[in-house]
Length: 268
Image (cartoon, rainbow, N blue to C red; front, side, top):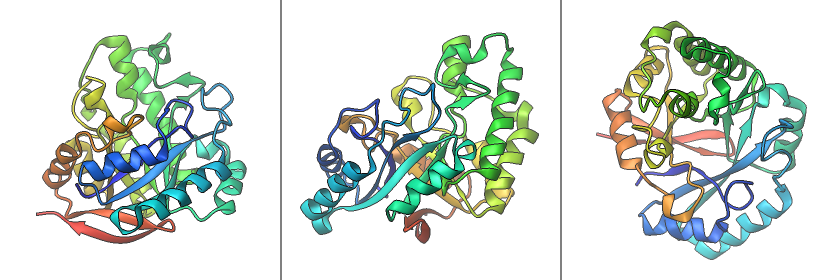
């Protein structure tokens, strides 16, 4: 395994794994580098609103770095929701410690939860997708992040409301490309997220088609993430995600240190 750059511990409201357990699970999967990216949320209606405790997170991180030494590279990260709406709070958080990696996530759009079927209340499938990508474009342009996480997270709400395990975004190509172009122009990256596999709603995302669009728009940075919330989920499906990155024409997967791309592991 190359890396797993999307992992949650009990510093996220929806996970109960210790950081040590997550690290041991990564080693058991043959993963040499991870980023612990616990949720940071300032949206009041979010279940994880103001849950993250940076000081305790960093204490646990330092203990794990000492415990695992050269066996495992552990990057300090966060998954920040709706950062474009809370820039002052986000930048204050990030300035307090030396983070390596920041995932930018959209869990809410127009007050609608992207992880519940109620996102589509009063909306058609196409209208909901359009609303989502309009908000994602604002996050991409104005938000604080290094890599956009699960850019097709709307698949979760689509599955719950319409029972669709796949989502063809070709009818929305212009909207999707707009997001990808902004990300590329800002020198940011995309994540290939494998959580859809364990949720039973299809292949890792975004699709190979969307990854190709990203490359065509000038995108160069891609990372992999299992979005694990339990130790047994660490690394799940990353081999498949890596194959998708290769199929889309990317030459490698990017690593970060102190929020800076520090290298690419080449893939054949």
